[in-house]
Amino acid sequence: MNLSQRAAAEAAGVPHRYLSIVESSASRISTNLELVDFYAAAGIELLGEASIGNEVTRAGARWSAPNSPDISKAVKATFHVEDTRVSFRAARALLNKKQDEIAELTGLSRATVKSLESGKAWQESHQTLLTFYERSGVEFVGWGDPVTNRYFGIGVRWSPNSSGPEFVSNPARP
Image (cartoon, rainbow, N blue to C red; front, side):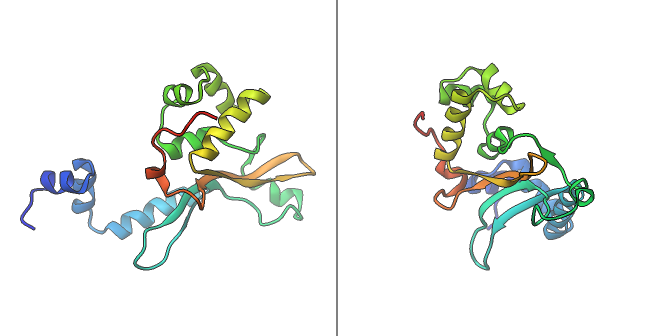
């Protein structure tokens, strides 16, 4: 192509430093596998549906979880658990937005967004934020354990009806 890295990055619409990292890596696949291993060791599963020749769809991440609530307490204790069924922080990360941006898009205050992300449960504000993320193409994943009243596998992914990050520009307020 006879392009500089900077020109190729600009033409591809990616930051120059990303292209520089990828091109200077000994093996891009090896680097990606190292990242997957890093997250897996931390108890995080990367999600997505892939087929040869197509882009990965429904990308996201979640905490690793047991396959069923019908396991011993000892086994459950080896997994990360949450007190709430959704992770608003993970949803915001999937959208690649800051708290201020989410507050502006939803009509909530930044302090409310921050509190909801930390697990506070104000019914009306919670529903407003939940509806905003779902309309933005975010699917919340995970399941609740009725015995412990805790949640496993909490995370987010792009919903089947969204087209990923391109889907989100400025969804209407809920």
